[in-house]
Length: 202
Image 1 (spheres, rainbow, N blue to C red):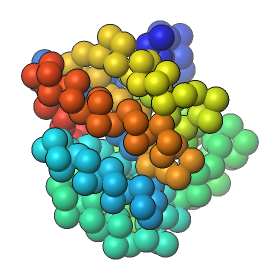
Image 2 (tube, rainbow, N blue to C red; image 1 turned 120 degrees about the horizontal axis):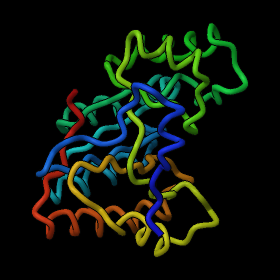
Image 3 (cartoon, rainbow, N blue to C red; image 1 turned 180 degrees about the vertical axis):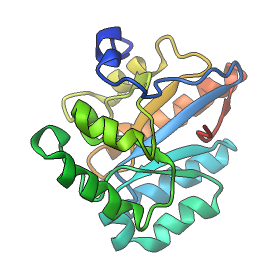
């Protein structure tokens, strides 16, 4: 089953970007890193296919692993802000949420933002949109779910894949079982489709 956000879900995030009008590109994104052992594997796999991606990193992980963060940049990829501590926005005030985003911004210099868990209240979204382009996704791999097998994650990712899609993947130890299975086959499929994996530039 292709996992796509329903229109009603999109309406909850006015101003957010869900896909990109590009007949030649696919946009791979990786949340939650950098993560030792995982980030390097993702970067090396992307290199083998001459593919670029956008990494929505956590400020706390950038603080812990600055060399890995720099490696992402040195390899020609894009970064985005994914908050400092991976907070669920629904349980936080606007002030606390923005403070967490700003803490990450001290280390992650980017105009792009993605809310963890896709949890952000309208008041928080309005505040964030004043300074960031909020990037969601049109294809969710569900690689983070321990209940999803690698094959099922791959099927959901590839089903109906098309130009302009923003694909959500993860750069984490929890997701690696699925991500390590999905990513090489996803890259092969995009190559067969004649599409280029690009960074998000808005």
